[in-house]
Image (cartoon, rainbow, N blue to C red; front, side, top):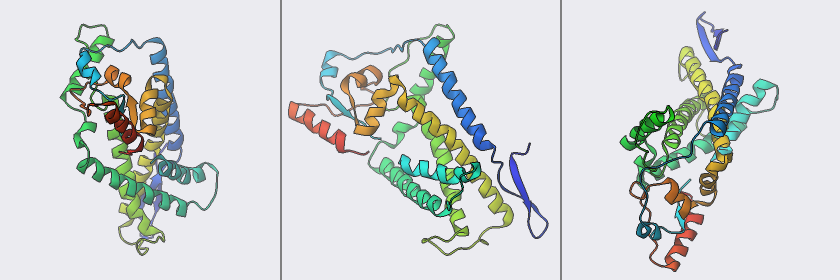
Length: 281
């Protein structure tokens, strides 16, 4: 069973034209299996989290009641639906909707990169030495070997950081290839030019675009699943409202690794709540 579909161009060259569409179901089933295995592990095997460090009452008292935490999924879902629904039997004029959704996603990603690089702590979403050390400790404790308890998380747990890296790889692959593929259709951005690249280059570009797309199917299934899990409810709420509670922050996060602005008075605390509700980043 070939993972790619091939065609012969007018010069007799055998070139890839896109991925085999059964990979859509492979990605969906793989995502579903992950959800089932993870839910079984959490239900029957996972132990309660234990952390090495705690905070003094003085530190806890300085944390605002609502801790601001930043968080476009609509364009991503539109892209996946317009890309893959025609391949599973739902026929409609999908090309225009697809490139419009891709344009919205591209602009939002560019905004996110600039905003995260200039106005936020760019490195907070990337794994650091403590994350890797604590991952080793968790593995040792899981298999029953002695190891110190891990520290509490920084702003983002390691699994969030790894997921972010996977989304960046798949998302940027689909965006970069998608921008070039727009030269093959009529859009408002630039003239149509299907001869910009050779047939082989176009084919490989379509393959990479398709692989990134099916990868995003599984990744988005995981994202929705974790967003609905009870133990992740506080994080999901923080993505909606822009803040998390002081109790959850102190339970899961280390103020030394993720310092937040202390509230000096009730009015200042109320200001932090308002900022958290209105701040999108």
